[in-house]
Length: 127
Image (cartoon, rainbow, N blue to C red; front, side, top):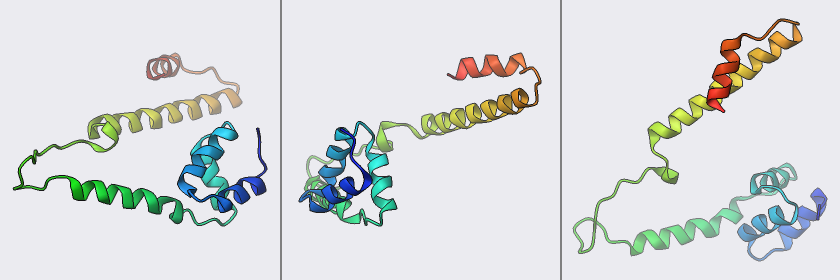
């Protein structure tokens, strides 16, 4: 089911649980939540209210966790999103390098020049 931007906005505005509605709209339209959010932002919808429930929930969980000095407290250092900083940096560098190679290949192709074999090999390795 594909909804118009107006239908997406109306459905979001009428929803009681706005945060959940974004996921529902994404599923109904076979797209990502980011696309739905972009559509809503483009139509002037303030998405802070959709995130308000998430913040409150995470604060409740944090308050229930033991703090240093309390019984049951164990210190853990987890990287955000389960990705180590080094892995995250390497991933970003890899994506950036892929973009550079593809842009260079595009310029060579448009100019009628042959694409350097080293670029082809590096692109194969990175993909």
